[in-house]
Length: 79
Length: 112
Picture 1 (tube, helix red, strand yellow):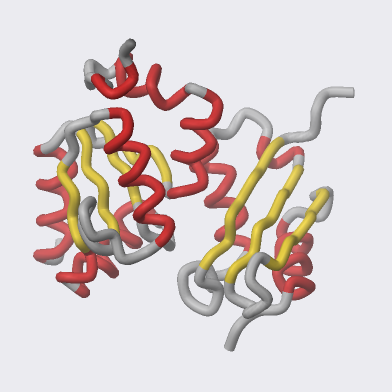
Picture 2 (picture 1 turned 30 degrees about the vertical axis):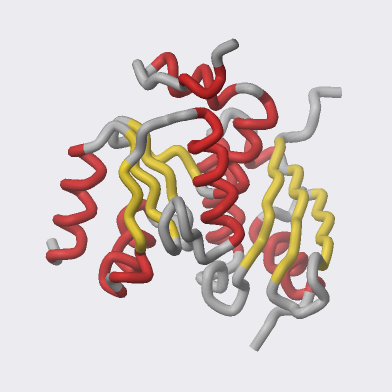
């Protein structure tokens, strides 16, 4: 069963309460999304580690229910 | 360690650049795999490709190997670099060529 954008956002926020999350539905089929996630949790981490934090937040759905999630992650710019 | 994991470990250790993908560089069978193979082909990087569609155990095993849930997966000198997003981001920023060259991997497609 495909996922809803809100469900993805909610799962990411649950794991990263401070996160700024923007989800874009790429194909309208519940299976292809792009997500931009900004969180302090990413500071000092490699891109692979940052993406793995998001995949962990999605509790195993990545690559299963969720076929494609184009991810862009970053730590907040120092204000 | 399962046979698939041994095969994966040997492939990753035995080749400078390895791309686990769906399909082959000439006939990719997934947009994301095609994108990464396309970047490597454009750069002229020599790489070993593994078509995970030909071996379901490798297809599943590679996800456990790095705890990365999707295909494609790029490895350079035994190190996991990333999937499509990360390789594309590194390509867009120009980091990818430095990454290869710093590890002694030629990118003849980028000269001139």
